[in-house]
Image 1 (cartoon, protein in one colour):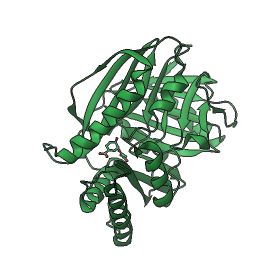
Image 2 (cartoon, helix red, strand yellow; image 1 turned 180 degrees about the vertical axis):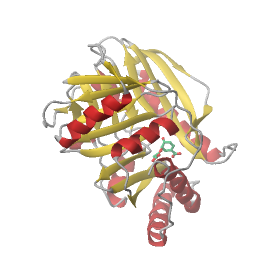
Image 3 (cartoon, protein in one colour; image 1 turned 120 degrees about the vertical axis):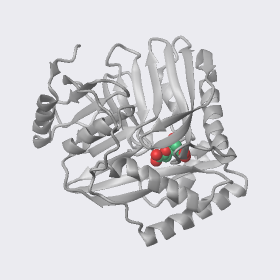
Image 4 (cartoon, protein in one colour; image 1 turned 30 degrees about the vertical axis):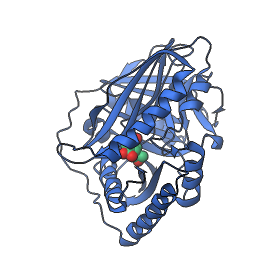
Length: 353
Ligand SMILES: C=C(O[C@@H]1C=C(C(=O)O)C=C[C@H]1O)C(=O)O
């Protein structure tokens, strides 16, 4: 089914009508693309999936047991975007206030996690926090700004009356499958320096993700090619990235690949179950869709998908935004450096507000 082409204003107008009628929709732009795509659902049903055989736009929480939502593609829209460049302007009015009590609480928990890691049963845990910000801006203007500032991210605006309004600009692909061809990445390690100087801590935490993905895919793919690790830019931050390209073995269901990958140690930890328990016990809130995944499912043909990890994102409620930021902890972590990393990551969304 082709996407009828419109102007950006028309698509935003149509999406505003959906919003007023409290009908679900998603608008998104793939990394580097010049096209905005949209999927509109004609009713308020919450469609949950477990087997990844339906068509639509998937929106999955970190804890997939809470229910993986798929928007039915009752109507599709698209618009050609003007060329987008990150000119670095900081027009956002929201500023990053250092909240002393939030900082103290976070440092304490991070310290506790590092101590837990040092005991030897956990190697890595990705710990996160939330930042509450007031904003007078509409979801559409925040989203439009994300398109301008982050041309290489997967930018989206998702709305469902039962799920909420979420918006993000993520640098991380979870999984892309086209026919038997499969691609993913291992992304971890963060630097806000002009020129990053990676330490062993970052190489180690990223290598854990790479090894995990290689193992997860080993029995599901043939000819798995793992790239050299390189430095990639995401907004004003740098990360370490390794790319995976392979061929899915015949008849491996998409569900098995997704379940093997999600959540990777880029957002959860190692061993996965122990890290997840630590997160659920100590973060102190439900991550909901932060560090879940989202994207197209079987929209082009059966067995095709393009999922991204829901990072650098926020939930919008009225004139309030809840930002989510985290980072990987290992035995070599310094709590103050980890705090600063979450501050730096929060700027990706704060710049839009
Ligand atoms: C967890 C986040 O990011 C993830 C964690 C990273 C890290 O620990 O360095 C880097 C990129 C992402 O895989 C986040 O942005 O909230």
